[in-house]
Image (cartoon, rainbow, N blue to C red; front, side, top):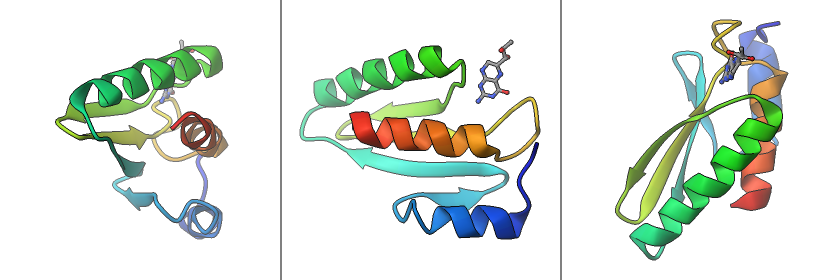
Length: 91
Ligand SMILES: C[C@H](O)[C@H](O)[C@H]1CNC2=NC(N)=NC(=O)C2=N1
């Protein structure tokens, strides 16, 4: 289930705005207003519920830091890349 580091590096080529550390993939999304960030969090939460795969999100003024990992696998899996892709589409 958990992808190997070299597999993750290869897949990350398609996700240039994301970085990986400590078994998580992270991207910071920037917004003009705090409420735009809140609305993004809501859209992302709806996607997470649809996929039953949930990110960590840190909401700050003008940005939202999104981190994805597969808790059940203890690292990054295909589910994380699917969620990251869907989040970018909704971004
Ligand atoms: C029971 C439920 O399906 C699991 O706990 C799901 C919920 N959402 C999840 N989200 C993430 N990021 N990783 C998981 O392993 C996970 N597991």
